[in-house]
Image (tube, rainbow, N blue to C red; front, side, top):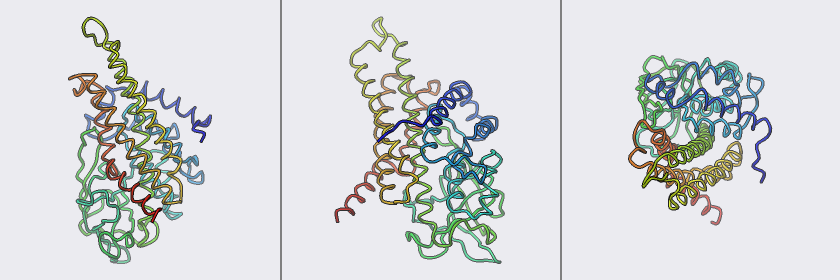
Amino acid sequence: MDFTLTEEQQMLQDSLRRFVDNEYNFDKRSEIIATGKGLDKGTWSALAEMGLLAFTFPEDYDGLGGNAVDTMVVMECFGRGLLVEPYLATVVLAGGLIRDAGSDAQKAALLPAIASGEKLMALAHHEPGNRYNLNRVNTEAKPSNGGYVLNGRKTAVIHGGQADQLIISARTSGSAGDASGQSLFLVDAGASGLTINDFATHDGQRTADLVLENVQVPENALVGPLDQAAPLIEKAFDLGIAAICAEAVGAMEALNATTLAYSKERKQFGVPIAKFQVLQHRMADMFMAAEQARTMAILAATNADSDDREQRRRAISSAKALIGQYARELGQSAVQIHGGMGVTEEMFCSHLFKRLTLINLQFGNSDYHLEQVSNLLLAETA
């Protein structure tokens, strides 16, 4: 398989790497996190001007008609600088759902607004105690006054506190654990009865817990077909997993670079520790882990848009499982080479390791995805 980027993708990668290196350094990132706002409006506007917020949307809705491989290029560069802006939440997850399942009116109203940077969105699906099970939805949506009334709780909503509008999953039939009976609804962040508890995560990102108490939405708030949202939700998260796999590769590449630079500066016994053969071997292993992770991220990206569920799921879960393992090994090695300095807030190393740790947990950890791959292989041989 040819893993070479197209000329346009290579130009995008070069441009984004320059942007991250020149416009989004460690100090600026720290300042953005300290504000508690979850993003820098100047940076978000710059991303919109570069066309990044429109990349994967149809041209009919001010998009550029890109695919998951384009998202991979973007997210890998974001991983190098650990951008905290809500690209994953707004463009990949929520924007992807509107693109794939929204009505013509919803697409016309939302996709150009996302592409221009005017609207932030988030997908609220996970609930307390569901432990990666996408079908365990207890939030209810019942017909009321020509629309629906929503009641329930959502947890770990990525950039939920920054969103102007949320896509919220709810059960319209069946019981918790059923794949059928799930539906998606657009809910304004300021809707009556909706409580949003925004907080920072360990890696400097923002997330939120939601409480819905008799939240009324109109009939046209329904996204996609009634009772049949499960496949849409699954594919949306598969696209999200492919995106954070690419982000992990970028973070691993940055972690290798900062560790190599530190090893050339840090001296022990009068010489840089980079001259010690055992550390050279360790850093060679770290480089190989990053390259293996890159291969798996490419596998995930090239299958993320597929409508073949089994093929897509196997590629996505394989990538997530192995990248989680590689990231942990590489991160631990980087911290050990840095010594005590590797876990201090002043060192970029610690922030990269935190983000890689959270990526491993997000949307299912390595053990969970190894189980998914195993189940798919067993089903094939049954």
